[in-house]
Amino acid sequence: MSSIPAPALELRDLAVRFAAHGGPLVAVAGVTLRVAPGECVGIIGESGAGKSQALLAPFGLTASDAQLGGVAQLAGEDLLRKSEAALDQLRGARVGFVFQDPMSSLTPHRTIGEQITEVLACHGRAQGTAARARARELLEQVRIDDAARRLDQYPHELSGGQRQRVVIAIAIACDPPLLIADEPTTALDVTVQAEILALLAALKRERHMAMVLVSHDFGVIARLADRIFVMYAGRVVEEGAASALIATPRHPYTAALLECLPRLDDPPGAPWQAIPGQPPDPRALPGGCAFHPRCLRAGDRCRTTRPELTGGVACHFPVST
Picture (cartoon, rainbow, N blue to C red):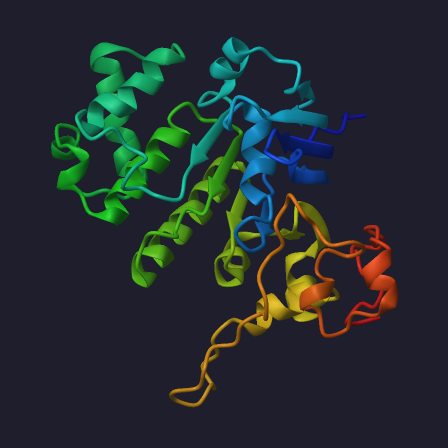
């Protein structure tokens, strides 16, 4: 009888707080999610929802004054109890990261080859000629043309799309079982966005790699995610299978995000839809449901009682019941 493998990543009631003037700033307030091996989980929400902090803080990629609570495990290992040195050993080797700005993700005064081979050397995978050969293979795997020549080029000699491909090559250099892609297409034009998403999908399929895709764009999330978590004000407000959640959103915030997507049948010159108001200040969250000041369905209960995540939605008056 085969045992069930541990989740590639598991968060249980994760909290992330920062010291701030006037009281603690709560960036993440009790997030729970699991990512199975080979699965792609999408996390979506507006800026400030806590998406990035929920994924980066457990790996030590946040401000030094962060206070973390709850549980965060990588393949069953407790991340929150690991030292900085231990986290440094697993970052890059067991989890790869792709960040949102390829223009600043690479060191400008070092060649592409140096930056890829450094990861291989740091984690004992290859050195010298072998590392350079592996770097060339990685550039070919991420569909960069003339890979041998690119190794000796500097980041400024490459386009934005090529730089993001290099960042992906670095992220997968040590064959990590988990990849975290934090807004990987934000700084790219629409055509290049599609190419990068197709590349990520191919790498996930070929390597059976677990992936967490963070975005504010449902169009991006829908391309890759098997399951989706919608975050607002540091909490998950809806979760579910991607196809079902997109077809029949239950939380008013999820429905509002989907309404903001442009449609092919929109008449020329039609104004873009927008959610009224602004996301709340994490230092001064409203009482009850944090979304209630922007929600057209809000009632008195929403203003006084925070809804718990039940049946995949945290809402007193779901859109679809």
